[in-house]
Length: 259
Image 1 (cartoon, rainbow, N blue to C red):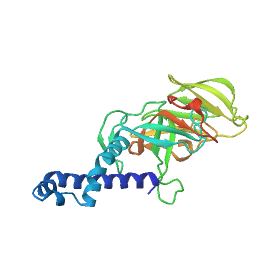
Image 2: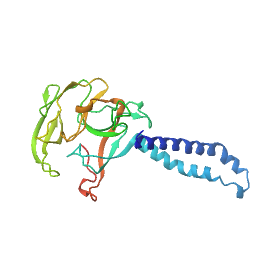
Image 3: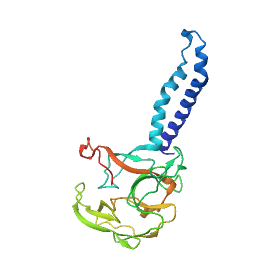
Image 4: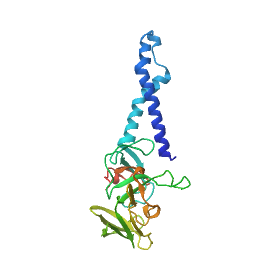
């Protein structure tokens, strides 16, 4: 179990326990206290703690489980769109309301679109995988039924070559070249290193799965290496950079929408 999954489980249990105590107090304990002398009518320490804490925990639980969840970008695999040290908000309801613990879907609402930047649970096959339980963030390149080809650093979707235009050198390392990519109507920036070989792909995305790639095409561990992401592994769509930190706050990135 990852840290995030463990935190969600603890938050769920705390919400349930404090909620039950709050309900018990409202329906029975408070009535019992009214019959006591004023000096003895105070709730016990445990009951008072749970009743006071429940509204706060409930608000955090609902917000984090069904509305938005914070996420820290852990690497440079999404450069130049997202930097290591960016703190983002993830829309939790855009792809359906899901169980706070586990991967079940409570209410189907929408599905990922090609070009969305998505947070998902890494599709590990066993706990022996070093990335087992980790959350990844990548861009949706292929949706169910798409024919994806990536050959000689050229991306083709359903027979249509994805257009790229040179946009200079990425200033962070001075090596990777920056391009503006038009992913069948979704425009964003990517990086490619001309001196680094890339894996070649020629696959059709199966039903209920998605093909993901990082915008840092030669610095991303993604579907080219480990395959498709099942729909049940999706956690939400990246929306907004709410803070960025690299040896101090990077104020220019605060509040940027993620495209």
